[in-house]
Image (cartoon, rainbow, N blue to C red; front, side):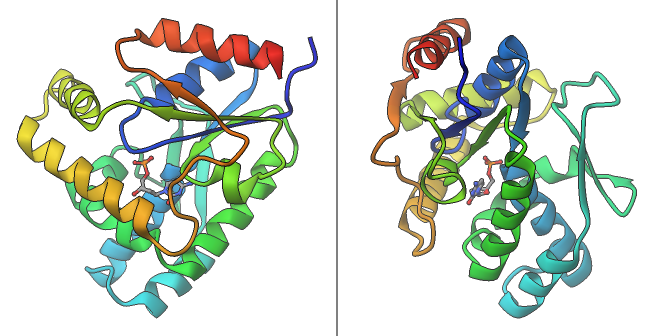
Length: 226
Ligand code: DC
């Protein structure tokens, strides 16, 4: 079987893209790359340096000079990669509610997107990669041979995120998660540049009512057909 060189997985927040991407990559021996990490790392760096993210020029300049290092995981604590900036491990810091609340705004800045898109193309051009994000099939790799757009209702996604957080021992409120997902869906889909939407040739995969194993099996079937 000749596998597609690049597999693009896009979809809204908490649709299970990362879990699918990670398992799929493992099954077919590909590199897994979660591009949300890059936007989160820039947001974290901006909050550290500027304390806020509304100064577009400063945040953009920072995104062009910051050195984000993503490597295979060195610890087995649930992470899919080590994420470092200037040697500091920020793997879990980029999952904080502070970063959650600011990352959509940062990822709407054109210069930030340009810098991150360049990075993603450099990583993906070697091939053998499952790349996960919002605009991989539409902007980063429109030539990808297989594009999957993963969907689930916002309520189902909120339930999954709630269980994920409480399983990690964090305090979470379902209603708050639901409201925040609704807000992020609207923001990510409504932005002018690279809005969240399926590419015309993307295959919509609805994970509602499916276990993660079933979603992985469906994706493997799509790889065989691609
Ligand atoms: O997938 P995530 O929740 O970690 O993504 C964090 C944010 O980054 C999200 O608000 C959308 C943005 N993002 C993006 O605009 N383009 C990507 N390719 C990946 C993420």
